[in-house]
Length: 348
Image (tube, rainbow, N blue to C red; front, side):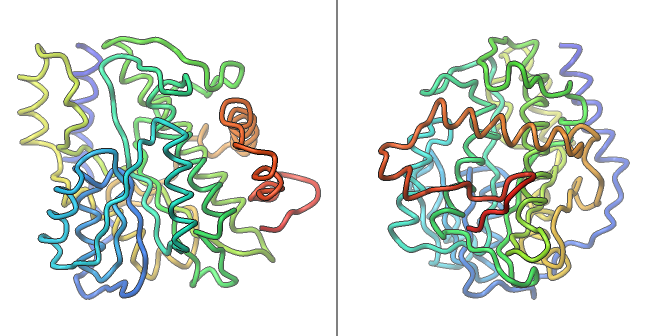
């Protein structure tokens, strides 16, 4: 209870104190002809982002576990665009993640903008189909698999000039700043927790995600190689369904506070749209926004040694827990999608 009150107080204080340094994008900014994919787009910030991207002329793919087809119909109606599709995926199940990647590959889809937005905060620890803790799988591992596959399959294609590069926007949280350093000795192990420790594990999963975003940006934007713009952000305190699993005795406090003091999904989507669509955000990689103000992620998230260790640890984890389905597929994918941290460079 004390931890939750502290978090709520900080969220309200941050919103009151925050002064945006970046203006929201005007409606005149268009992305005609660009293909955009948004995970967790059936509700909350993801749905608001999908509406905005569709309204700006994007062809929007909504990758969701639920909300079919109602959420897609809502987005079409709100945006006035019929270039909206829904794709089914359960990001807690790596088999489902691979199936989504297979579908995009087989369709020949090429993404210009990918918003990795899906998030959750369960009341208690839950195991995924592969035995991972759910937040770890959804917030980080699924995104690692998606990006790996997209680069290998040609669904995301690096550009010679950064101004023409596709963009990957990762929705994280400033909760990563309060997390303890990543425990690489137990990386990926299932840890049981209850109501009292849910917020701590949420922050830990977001630290892993922010660290991944830092390393992904570095690896995809080396001199003399192709470019993929990678940005991350915290949208701020948002009134969404993420607290739907809060204990019944806390909901009379949490729900009204979120309704009156937190951002609406539409306002929280503004920094996401900026990173997806603004010309300025396409001229460099590695921006981190807290709402509409650029900041630097925590020291742990930007420490190069942590980034490299995370990359290697997650790579080993995926090889151990989610091997490719056949030796033929293994040979087809071949080497890493990205060059290693040192040594011989490998091309896509």
